[in-house]
Structures are given as structure tokens and as C-alpha cells.
Figure 1 (cartoon, one colour):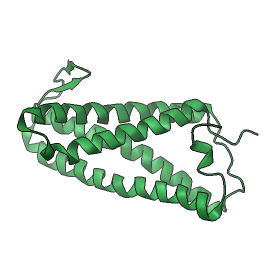
Figure 2: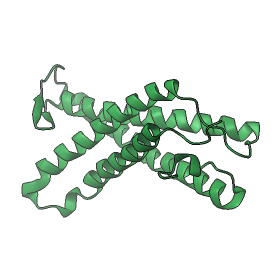
Figure 3: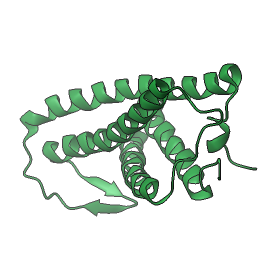
Amino acid sequence: MKNRYSLLQISLHWLTLLMIILAYTMMLGRDYFPDDYRQLVRQLHYNFGLSVWLLVLIRIVIRHRYRTPPITPPLPRWQAHVATLTHWLLYLLFLSLPTLGFLTVMFAGRSIYLLGWEIPQFITPHPEWRSGLRNTHELVATIGYYLVGLHAIAALFHHYFIKDDTLKRMMPGK
């Protein structure tokens, strides 16, 4: 039996991570850009976030098409359950985070440009909702740090201490 994810799954995994890093970087680094670039940085954040949303949707569909390769040696049942739960929480997080951000912008009545095209304002602006949505978006983003960190630490722990093939299954190459 094949013990690696498909090349498509591996590519989408690492592309998703890159888009997540870029989305977070744009917001964390926004104060380091001159004021003239603030709007560009904000739009890049939106585009990277929406890319994450789309990539996660694609990954969920593909996850049902391809079997998850087994870990060798097999994990204890409780670890397998925690790993599955963590993966689904990551999917939920990176679907909800861009959705909350998108709604924050739409309810504020501001424009979003996706790859240069303006997304029509199809939601009636309610600026009073912006604060709650933004705070929720920021809270979920903070949770994202911890969940992604837990995911990475678990993969490294399995690779270096447990010495199974958890990490190797998702690494590019042979």
C-alpha cells in the first residue's frame, strides 16, 4: 500500500501553508509599510486569505478522493483520533477565518479586490457589526497560531522522537 500522500495533496498542503504565512505576514507587518502601501497590503491580505479558503475547500474535496496513507508504525488509537480531530479543526479554522474577514469587510461597506477585480457589495453594510466580526476574526487568527504550531510540533515530534513516517508522508520528493 502507498505510504505517502499524492503529489497533488502534498503540493496543496505546502501551498496552503505559504498562503497562510503570507496572509498573517501582511497583517503583522502592515505597520512596517509606508502609509502609501497600506491599501495594497490590506488587499494582499484579503487575496491570500481568500486563497487559503479556496485551497482548503479543494483539499477537503481531494481528501475524499484519495485515501489517507497509513502511518508506519501505526499510531495508538487515541493519537489517531487526536490527529484526525486536529486536521478537521485546521480545516474549519481556515474556512472560518477568511469567511469572518470577508464578512468584516463587507459589513463595513469596504471593497475587496480579488486578483484586481472588485467583488460587488452584495451584503447590506452594517458598520456596527464590524467590531464584533473583526474581534472574532482576530481571536480565530490567534487560535490559528496555536493550532498550526501544535500541528507542526506533532509532526516534528513524530519524525524525531517517535521515528515514524508521519512527516515523510507529506514531504515533497521521494
